[in-house]
Length: 177
Image 1 (cartoon, one colour):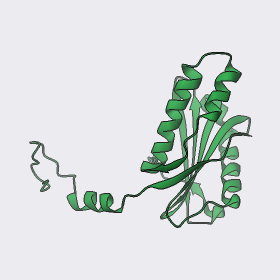
Image 2: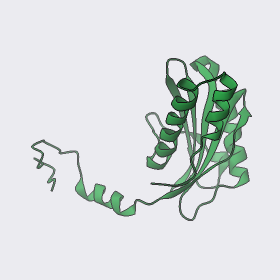
Image 3: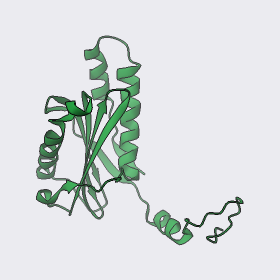
């Protein structure tokens, strides 16, 4: 057991709070992920997904608000080296709503924008604080999308339209943990 001093690993792990970690583990659960097809947003090919916490639902209104926010963000993405492909996550979380726009950019990099707000109040969605990163459920979808981008676009075969069609069709659906 970590006693906030010397761990069994022989390391000083004073930043670890076992009670907090165990409480997170006790509350961890699966969330539903649904792809919404692909669409054109601000000149980008976008794959939108819905992520829903237990008891929460993403409405059509929430999706439309997310697409507007993504469109605003993507309208200047060329300034950040955008390659024209993006993933949109519309997450009805347990503590509020989140919209993530992940855009593939030059040099094998990605650009991530996170917007946060209270539950079911799209008018209150604002850019997240500096340093905010995807939660475990959002990261699961983005990991799938990283693999799909690599598999179909970077390592794929055929003309680019065939590669993009394969990427569009490679979606994650069901429960993620």
